[in-house]
Image (cartoon, rainbow, N blue to C red; front, side):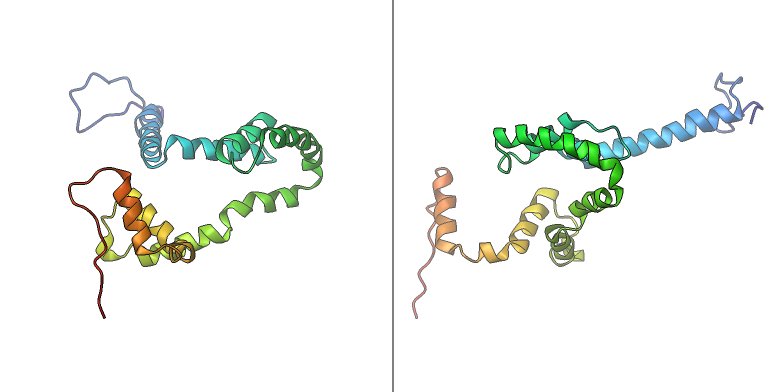
Length: 185
């Protein structure tokens, strides 16, 4: 690993004093890590990345940061927590911080709940139905909207076609007046 690295493809470059170890460590390994980071950054939005980082605050192996958990509640669950409940959460987290070392098995169970909820399971099952081989080029937003409609079909069935057309028509002025044709029997 301490011998000089000879690049056969770029033999005219002036990197004659690069060792084999340096080549694999810097050029190959760090290049692969950079490529993976760019791919992850392109797939996950900033809010999803922030959510994942804040979820790490619940890991008992990491330093416990109460402010991150309160920020998680305030930012991503604003309809579930009032300001008073967030303040109460800080007090409860002090008790949690004392109990974590004594009950690691309970904490591991809590950390797995987010991936084992019924909604996420239904979403993955529904994805097989909604995104087929024929719909493989579907955009992320359109796929997300189709999945929501499919997963929450009990709620969707309560809306009438007339209500949907009326809501759509009143969003902004249209060149064509939207109407549902009357079907005569």
